[in-house]
Length: 279
Image 1 (tube, rainbow, N blue to C red):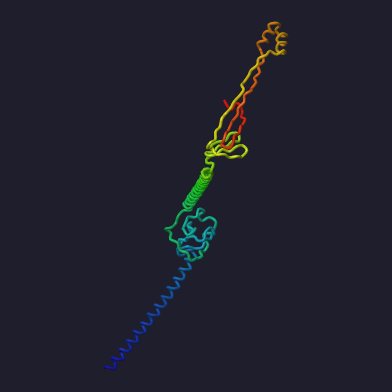
Image 2: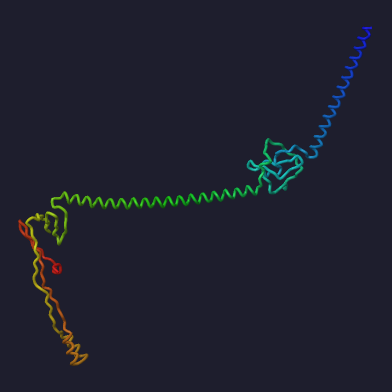
C-alpha cells in the first residue's frame, strides 16, 4: 500500500512539473509575442513621426536646436542658452523630417519671445550709449579742470617770480652802502645815503646841498607886417589897411634859464635844466 501511494505521489509531482513547464512555455510565448507587439508599435509610432518630446537639431538651421513635443515640430528654438519663439515659425523646412537627437536639455519654463530679447538688446544699447556719453562729458570736464589748474599754477609762478625779484632788489639795496634808491634826475641818482653824479662819481649826502638858480624871462613883441597891410588895402581899401594894423604878428622870445647847483664837501657841480622844469 505504501509503495502504491509513493508511486502515485511521484506521478502526481511529475504531472505538476509538466504543467508548470507548459505554463512557462506559454508565458514565454506570450512574452515573445508581447515584445514583437511592442516592436511593431515602435515601428508604427516612428512611421507616424511620434518621438519623445525633447530638443533636437533644427532642420531649418536657424538655430542650434528646436523643440519637438512628441507629435511634431514647434516654433520654440534655443538661442544664446535660452528658449525663444522663432518669429518665422515652421516656415522654411519640411516638418516631416526625422528628428536628430543631440545632448541638449532646456526647461520650457525659460522660454522668452524674440521681441522681448530684442527689446532688451535695444535697452542695453541705449544704456551703453548713455554711459559712453557720460564718460565723454566726464573726460571733457576733467580736461577743463586740468587746464584751469595749469593756468593757476602758471599765474602763481609768475607772481612768485615777481615777488622774489622785488625781494632780491630790496635785499640788495639794504646790503648796499648807498641804501635804497630814491629817484633820478638828468643822470643824478639819489640814494638814502649817497648821491651819484652823471659822470659816475658818488658822494655822501652828509654835508651835501642842492640849489636851483633861474635867470631871464619871457618877452613878447607885436608888429604889423607889410604883407598883411597890403592884403588888407587891396581887399577893403583904406579901412582894410587900418584893420591890418590891428592884426599884428606876435613873437615870443624864451630867454629863461634854469640851473641845478649841487655842492658837496669835495666840490660842486652845475647842471643846466629845461626851463619848464622850474615851473
